[in-house]
Structure formats: C-alpha cells, structure tokens
Length: 292
Image (cartoon, rainbow, N blue to C red; front, side, top):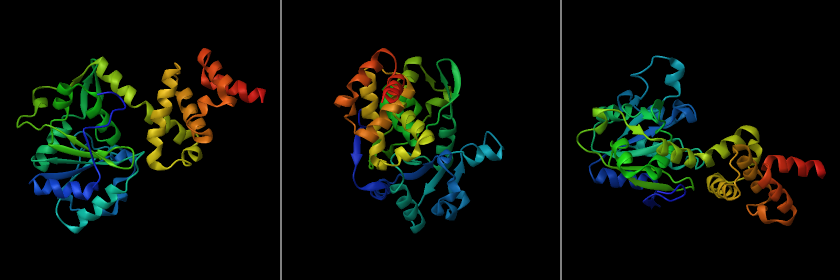
C-alpha cells in the first residue's frame, strides 16, 4: 500500500464502541501502551488496574530499571468502570503522538504476550534490530506498507486492531491470527525494500520530531490533529522538488506553519524555491534572510 494511503476501514464511534463490538464477538481486548511516549504509570486508570492484568514486555529480557520504565506494557481489559475510564483516556490521546493501540484476539493474555515478545526483534536486511511495533505510528505503517505475506506473518497475534489514524480519529485494521504462530519457526525477516518503504513512511514523523526538539513553539501553533497531515503534504512538496534532506523538509514544514501550506507558490518565495533546487532549501532560505 502506498505511503499516504488510508487503512482499510475507519471508525467514528471511538474506542469504547469498538471495545463493545469486540466483546460482543467474544474476543479479548488488550491495550498496548508505548512507555517511551511518557511514564505509563502516570495514567491514573493504569495505576488502579490489578497487576495480574498487565505485563511489561521487556520483563523477560532485562532487569534494568531504566529499560523497564520505558518498556511497552500490555493490559487486559475487562467489562468494568476502570476500563471505561481507561478507554476515555485512550480516546483523548494525541493524534500526533499516540501512545496506545488496542488489539482484539481470541488468545489469552499469556499467549498474546508470547507472540508479541517474539516480534520485538527481527532480522532486517541481514541485521538484528528491535522493531518498535508498540509505537502506534509504526504499527500503522507496518500494516499499510509491508507486503501482505510479510505483514500477516509479522502481525499474526490478533483478529483486529484499533489505532490512531493520525487525524483525530481511529483506523480499524484487520489482522490474521493462525492457531500456530509462524514466528515459532524462526524470526521475521524484513528485506531492504521493506525497510526502505517503512523508512519513507516515517519521514513525516521525523519532520515533526525535528520541529518538536528545535522550535516547539512553532509546532504548538498547529492543532494536534492537523500536524501529521500538514507534514505529509509538505513532504510531498519537498519530494516533488528533489529536496531529500531532513533539515530541508523540517524547514518546509516550519515555513508552512508560519506562512501557510501554499507558501511554495507565493511570489515572495518563488526565488528562494528556485535556488533550493540547485542547492538546498536551508541554504536558499539563509541567503534570502541575509539579503533581506
């Protein structure tokens, strides 16, 4: 599937509606929370959940307290008021930096944990690497971008998943969950082309991340649900003009926020854009500032 395609189905009912539909179908529902997006323990609904209902996915591979603190957590959701509060928190999460996705499966908690742990490490272009599939942004990219046979092997742990569509709503993804986990027979292997496609799908988030680190006040001027779509659109403009540098792409996003997404075509920027084709947008921009 192309880099900017939407997933198979979108839902307007929110996490609670999806949860209720999955429970009606007799599936278990699990919340996969990315600890690296902030302390999982800061979520009040999580603090109240019994220890038997949650698993730290790094617990089987390390005792390092720092690693465990930012590790992904899996939570089994039941039909009670505490889980309803958790679903409300999930519904209200950031569209730019979503930290939680939901998985529906007939597997038990222990069976699901085993399958997820087998997917933490993959063979990518001949090298071992950690695949951060618990990051909702990466999860969506994996489902959209990988060849079907690779995706079904890698994501063989549930029937459906609900992830942020990065625009303030949800994407409802279909998964396959065979009785025998294909990764019991060996690790998942991603080709160089697979990694290239995944890398391309992460470019918009790299632009956002660079602005968040360098000029957070600029990014703050854009509504949360509009940030990723704007980054995707500006990335497309950059690629049309051969601007491959991450710095150029982040600068283009910053200029779009300050001057509007059509800044490329504005008369006062035409000369700068033309100079960028032969050098870089950053150099052309600095030259423009010096000449002003």
